[in-house]
Length: 425
Image (cartoon, rainbow, N blue to C red; front, side, top):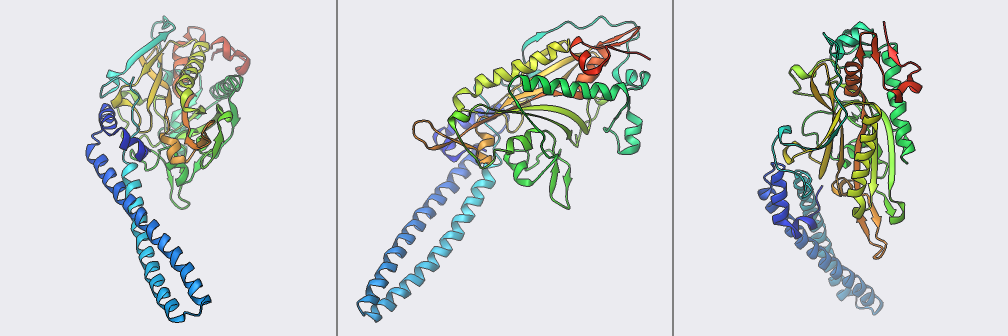
């Protein structure tokens, strides 16, 4: 959530940069400033009433002690009227604050100055790439056929148990999933991230804190009886560990990692590119989260990008890193890099990670602050996160790219985790 102070001090710049995201904000911003001006006037009035109440209260005491009962009773009547005014003022002030918050949550995060203009993924900018697509054998199979051939994943059984988008991993398919999770976690821990194991459901405050609620796309599963939400990413519970906290500047960086299943409704996802593991309602992911000093958050973002890049390199997958254009960015992000791996049998680039800096957008909602080294005032921290990595499309690319006449060969980095280097019939 943007702060009113930022909007007041940078009004035209905020309007211009939000337009890069395709968001026309001028009308909302004018309304925000108008409501905030009214809120400030109400605050001044409330302070004046309270000051007069304090003076009158002391006056009553002095009048009572001096025996001036009639004057004391008159002062009491004035105090009673002032209290009535204070009560009305409080209601008006609370209403203005509610209106202000309801307007502020409509504004997405302001994109970083380096975010390229554009409306769709076609306008994203490739930053760099690596690896070489494999030369596949004749009649190479897509991963859903390989999964059936080698009895690794049962999509139909998942439909029977739950529904489409909930696959059942079997035998070496299940072992490969576990191997990837362990590999990703070990790599994150080695990079200095503290491993966490958070709940898989969160309350409304947690969803609001990271900007996932209000749920504008309707992608979160809602457990209505308890008003809990199944997490679409570990980012939500892990970042909320520090909700309503004030850190010392020396606490930075705070680095956390977590493996969780993730749940997404994927409403409106249709078409030829959603087969198999390409788009699921439940999937596994290892997340990395950082809390940073504002002066160091963009250096931290580059570190996180480097960490994810090292993972796809070790998995020997062809990849590219793209900087998202304004129109393809999330509501909460200030700058996002996506990682895509090449799935050779499908001949598709599949997104496997987003690494983002949210600057102070989430921390303003979370009330996550740090104490400035010099002024000792509490200031908003910066939050960042990234997938390191999401498993389904990684697994799809590993199966497709690794297929040979003898079976599916796995990258060397996974051998110690799987206990086998090839999947054969």
